[in-house]
Image (tube, rainbow, N blue to C red; front, side):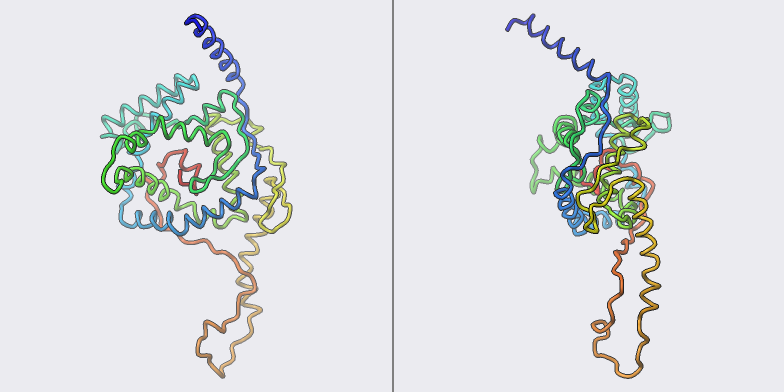
Length: 336
C-alpha cells in the first residue's frame, strides 16, 4: 500500500470518528447479568469486610487528616495525565488546557502535588478517562457488570480502565520499570488503594442501611459515569432515568421492579421496619423469671423476632479524604 493511500485511509477514518462523536450516545442502565453480578458483589463485600476496610481503618488511625490530604493530593496530581490525554482525544481543548495548567501549578508550586494551589487559583479538577472518551465517540455502554476485587464497571468502561492503567497511569510505568526486593515497587500503588478506600469509609453506613446495596451501588455508578460523560451537565432524560427494567433477582426473592419509585418505597418500608423492630422485640419478650439462673445466660437468651443488619460505625475521616479521584470513588466499594 502506498503512503498516499495510507494517508487517505487514516483521514477518512478520522472523519468518520468526528461525525460519530457529534452525537454522544447516552448510557443505558442495562443489567442483564444480574445473577452473576450479585454473586461477585457479595464476594467483594466479604473481601472488603475482611481485608480492605480494616486496613483502611488502621490507616486512618495512624495518620492525621493533614497527612491524608497531602497523600490524596499527591495521587490525584500524579494521575492528571490520564485526564489531559483523554481531553485531547475527546477534542476538548479547554478541558485539556485547564487540567494541564492545574498539573503544572500543583507539580511545581504545590511541591509535586502535595498541596493544591491550583484550586485556590480556580483551576479545579475536571476528571475524565478513556471510558468517557469511548462514550464521546459513540461507543455504547453495554451491560453493567461487577469485576472481582475491582467493583462496578460496564462493557465499555472496563477496557477503558485497562487503557488508562497501562498506558497513562504513571504508577503503572513505575511498577514496570522497577523491580525491588519483596516487590516493594508496588507500595506506592498499595498506598493509593488504601487512601482511596479510607476516603470512602464515611459512605459505608449509608450503603449498609440501604434496602438493596447492590442496586444502590449500581445506580450510583451509572449516574456518576453519566456525570463524567456529560461533564456535569447530563440531559434531563438521563436525570429522570430509564429505569423501567426489572431486577431478575431481588433481595427478597421476588421479581422486584427496578424503578426509582419502587426502590424508594421499599427503602422507606425497610427503614420503618428497622425502626420498629427493637420496640416489637421488647414488647413480645417474656418477663424474666427470678428463680433459676442458667450457667450460660447468653446461650439461653431468646432470639430477636426480626434480624436486622445494623450498619457498622466508621471512624470519621479528615477533609482530605474527600479529595480522592473521581474514578476511584465511582468504582468502589471499589478497589480501582
